[in-house]
Amino acid sequence: MDAQFQQVDFGPLKQFLDNDDVTDISYSNGGQVWIKTLSKGVYRVENTGIDNTLIEKIAFQCANTMGKSFNMANPFLDAESAELRLNFVHDSIARNGVALLVRKTPAKIRLVKEKIIEDDYIRLDIHDFLMKCVEGHCNILVSGETGSGKTEFIKYLAAHTKENEKIITIEDTLELHLDKIFPTRDIVAMKTNNIASYSDVLVTCMRQNPRWILLSEVRSAEAVMAVRNSISSGHNILSTIHADKAESIPNRLYSLLESNIDLEQFLRSIHRYVQLGVHVKGYYSKEKQKFHREISEVVEFYVTEDNIPKSNILYKKTPDGKITLHNPTKYLLGYLESQGLIMQPDILVKEQFKSQDEYKVDNSNNLDIANIPKQNQSANQTVASPQPINPQTISNINGPITQNNIQPQNITSKINQPQNQIPNTKIINPSNQTFNNQINNGQLNQQPNQINQNSFRQVPINNQSIPTQIYINPNNNQ
Image (cartoon, rainbow, N blue to C red; front, side, top):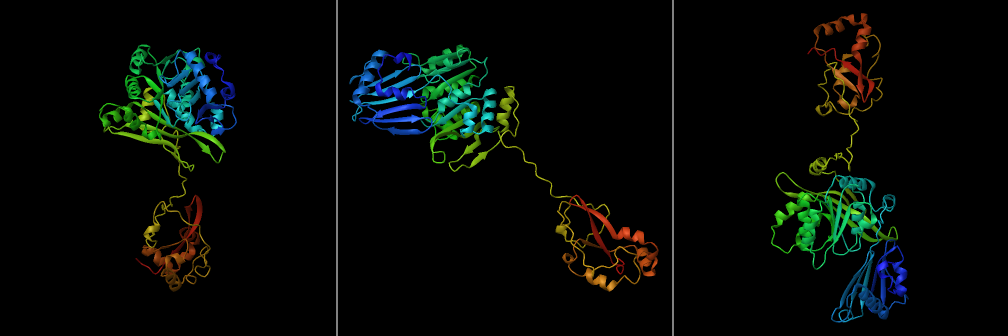
């Protein structure tokens, strides 16, 4: 139990306050108790023994502890300590009975790398990417719905900042507790109130010379201007905001403003100084049969050379499980480089090297392939494996060529057939008149080896030396 509320008798409510799995407790509607846990999400508990009388008793005790009043004249009561935040609404306003919401904010970091990877809270590559961005002093805004775990993730990111970098937290309600989590670090925890506004605290914050400024949540125009002034002055910021997706964070910031600042000018400033937006989603998973939180989107913001604000979805997971990944742009890589961190351009999507399944055919022999269709003359075309040659089509191709075994009419008839009927066969028409005369005079019988070399050549196909059969048409004198 929190030391500040040790004198308060919480009664049956104490069992939920002592349970580390419980994050929120809601009492309303004359006796209904709803709790939110890390494992099961939101559900109603029955027969708790908690009623209006007990809640009013707790409210009066908390009011005395805080030095405040809780009655019809003061129907709202906020009571907070190091690890508890309580909000009461008097039954003069809540007509169906006094209402209470308890938010537990323990001074510890609930997220552990091994556990969140195992529970599919975040992908390993996205986790390591974000850790590098924190190391490279990127300004990061985390969006999500109420209770999705935005503050817990900000605390996890802040835990990975360097030991010698000063941190100042600015909150209107204490939730981060980084000064208690890291008591040996240079951390200043500031809290706004009716006397010290965000602007007042921010001016003092700048004079404290911090490296990191952490806003627990951006929920007002004053907080938006604090974010803008912080990042534009060269400080780094981690903060949360309510938004439906990370990509809409700049527009959500603009919607919180109460002034007539030009939209395009404002968006350019946010896209220029806020490097990343991260969206945390919490929902009941039917697959896992429990309440599940996950990082569902990571977006990069940047401004082009033409001064146009744009965004780049680095990671996105849709409800059906579809994953989208893109590498960071040159703008983020350039920013990290200016901070002394070199990031690989393909850190998220590795460059794919296509397998070389096409090979060039060696035409160094200067064979005439005029009869081969043009679409088959591509140097990078994949050549099919040779098929067995019909023995009736060619005879004695590896033996001595004589006048008897040369049958011009048969060969000519085969040449006139379509090319695809003679697999892996090239037709050449020697233009050398001397060569034709030698054939007609029968002189080629004296040089069988030379003819074999010209008639049977090794052509590399698909990295293998495949024999290519060559027909010679002695009747063509062209």
